[in-house]
Image: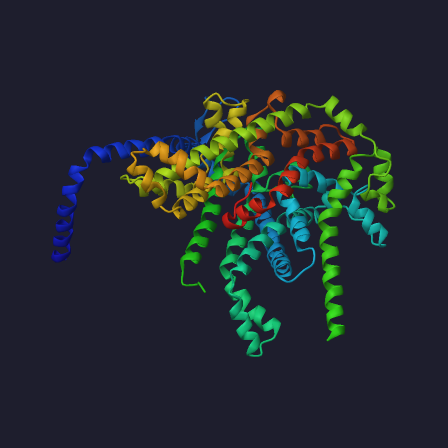
Length: 314
Length: 281
């Protein structure tokens, strides 16, 4: 302990001398650094940290956005209301179900697409471009497109079902099908992004490994299950987290396609927050809902970081 | 062996056709239908015919009424202004901050970096209510500046550029420094010209993000003269109880076409940027 302190002071002493000599230059450097960083940090503080504090504070108040001055401190009542009334639990439940559905379908399909794109393939560039089109298309246009694709009477999908002799489906107007239809749409929209991420991961897998295994007599399937998939576990985790966080924040589908219905079966949480704050003018309650959503997303990100840092690394 | 190869080829071809159908057919239907009247749109779908995917008997009527009846032209113009401004300001602020963090030694650098790192975890959509209060409190609601100002200091942009700056050898600047060049000159004449690819990548992803953003512009702008394209398309579809399908599709096409063209030309940068960052708009 004492030797440690001694070396510490010794090194501090040796460092102090040149530091003193360079004070003026260092001061100027600090000023320049501040100048380069100030615009970025200022905006970051105003538009990321200040809203965070405002949100935390407002979750203890009852107020409306039309007249924020007429606010009332209500303590934990907003959070108590979330437990007492069913809307929060329903909306969070639906959102988790939606996220789960998206992840369960996107991961295997995106992985299969990536494997396909990683093999020798004619028209590989064309296929890659195709699956990326929905990724660069806005969520508004995708939602608009799909609400017409899924239309019960004149939609393309029902036309196709008719053409192959299957029964027409109500899709978005049915409590049982609406959320599933939104999952299908999101799969279509996001799978290309997942595939690109998996493809980047696949290209990082050393070819010698699978070649050696093949020479030792392993089948293609064995190589896939015992070498490729374990090696891609970090990429998979990454894609799972991105898709989860993305799904938890989905808004346009609920806003444009279903208005949260039928019977709240697609009342995704961000849409619920939007409605609560801007339509029903209960901004305090909306802030409390936002705090919970923030904590959920933070928890997921933390778990991701912990897992990525752990020994679980090939 | 030959038979197996043949089966493989047939399988591959089938998968390729399936993928192209799944991803291209909806676009073909929407664009083709945008060039038809309502009656033809419905007629081509039930019973389904190949005409649904091709603009047979095309008319630009929907586009004419779209531009005459709605404020879509203003919305397009607003979006272009907003997107270009956001790209320029994001590139400037992020590259300056990245320079300070990689090229200048100063106390507290790790604290600054931690502050930036933490914002990466914040879900943007969850913060719209307080953000609305902050931005309108600054008097920026219903302005184009209000649409972009929360996103200019992009932690994602900073990370992308910081990584590129770190990979740039410091020796490049040594000669200039010996000649007495200051940080401002080194930044503009030596560092920036050597990080063109990451700058283009960040610019493109920022453009994509801005062009496609919906929730925030919906919340912060009510004035139709300041509306952006995504909000215009969203409201056009829901304005009337019985929407004109062709016209709605024309709006969707107009809102998407510029980005798709940009994507097709500069695909390499888009895909690379998304794959390395894992973040999209």
